[in-house]
Image 1 (tube, rainbow, N blue to C red):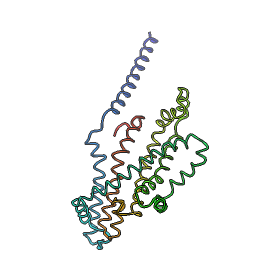
Image 2: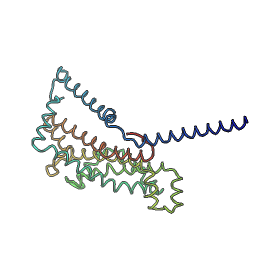
Image 3: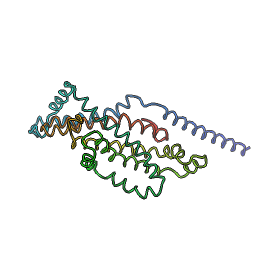
Length: 300
């Protein structure tokens, strides 16, 4: 009788543990499927950068108001910079500055993506190629983008082809190295399972290697865009020409030539705005989607 009661108690305890485990899994799935309320998103993601921006503006204005910085050629007031933005908007030039650079930057990045992705696959999968050009890619990635502007001008002249060449030379090594790093972190079990199912060659690369290496590849894409944008700004600053139009880099150089600090600050803020906007609108959603698909991001 006592033995029967003991077995019954153990059975009840096992059922309670199973029920608790199932409840925990259900709660985990529910939390993963629940979207973050907008109020929480505003509090954790929107409000902090707004507060930081407000603090910077207050400190900036305080430097002017309390005569800590008295030379407007060194530091213009926020009002002077705002007036520069207003004039560019009323003259219909502001969006033109932005679009001239954004169009070049995105097209150059897409070209770098088309070249860097297969190059990274080849370097990662072919030992001889990796030994031959792997160190060269790492060296090119560490080379400042501005170093490519003078030879690109001599090779191609002052035109858009020169701009794209500088972008490619700056971005392709980052994209390729990012993919190589991602492939190096793919578990060998995935590759063996893919070969067992007949996924070899380019089919295995497309269906097994690339999806498994996606987090590292995405990090390489983000870095590739950063290099693309910086390379383009360097090219526009150094190789400015009326035939190329006025992009953000050329606007920065025009401000220097005119000794106009408000125009210089205008160009700097626009360059920062485009970089942040591309990250928030393109790369951050992609990164969240990839992490969420792998169970690495529950909320947000």
